[in-house]
Image (cartoon, rainbow, N blue to C red; front, top):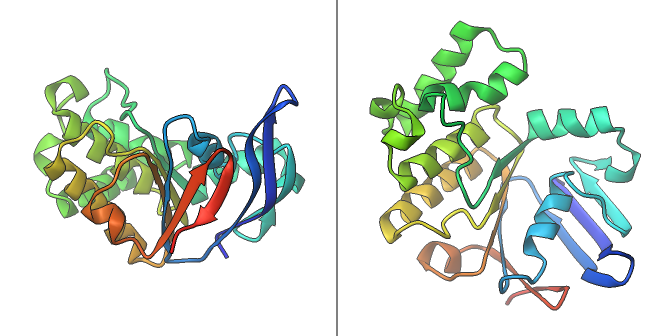
Length: 221
């Protein structure tokens, strides 16, 4: 299993529970949508999945590892090599080109420069974005930046991709292109989790959907 939550709770200041007994199991190759209103706790849930926050109580297993037993160094290694994050904003570094931005995870993982460029240019070609490689983020559209951020999340071939409202600021066409990228990733037998407060064709046809409301996570029929 890629991700397992068992009775997971999360509170801030020990009084305000934003997650109340969350349970879910996400398998390899599974694409999961978690929907809920703004402020429902979706981002908190995703941050716990990505080892960016700790739960207050409950059991969490990520790639068959107990999250509570991981050292900071082990958690950082899993985030770098096994989890790809796509956020609501692209978060590209403005003084680096699109190619250089995409190279960052490979650089951190110690890949040689020539290998980094070959891998990244291959992904840009795969998704029809080679012409953007030498441009800086401010020379591209928001949709192009978000797709570049998605490629950056995929470049280390992570086993899990976590996307936090990835199409919130995109038009219909760019939303479709981004979801096609995520679908391409999932076909390689990886797991993907997208949290969103909106609906759409790509979201509605997801095989596994959850609703998060008032801190309670329920599987949608």
